Image 1 (cartoon, rainbow, N blue to C red):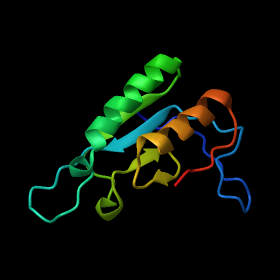
Image 2: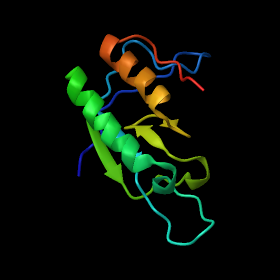
Image 3: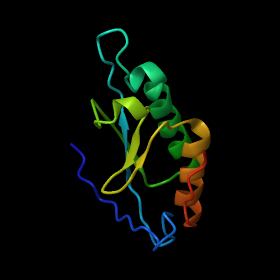
Image 4: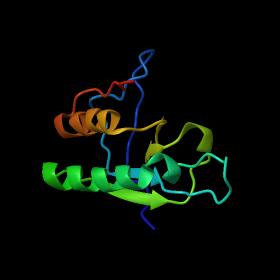
Length: 114
């Protein structure tokens, strides 16, 4: 199991990921709940998002890992990605993850996109 090695700070009053943040692990829920009508991250495409993240991280040569987990406890708001030791990205999609990877790559502040 990967141990969180991230340092995540929130900018005061802005809700942004600060420039001095180092991220090394992104945790992606890939849980598929067995009963019809129950929300789950996998049913909403999280496995494809985890694959996308791994490919994008490799292409960008980032020092970041993707950890796939069974549940992050936010099924209603999935797919869910968590910055290890930090905040969640609910209803994750490729645009939001690209913005996160851009911030990780450049060291700029991360502002979530809708």
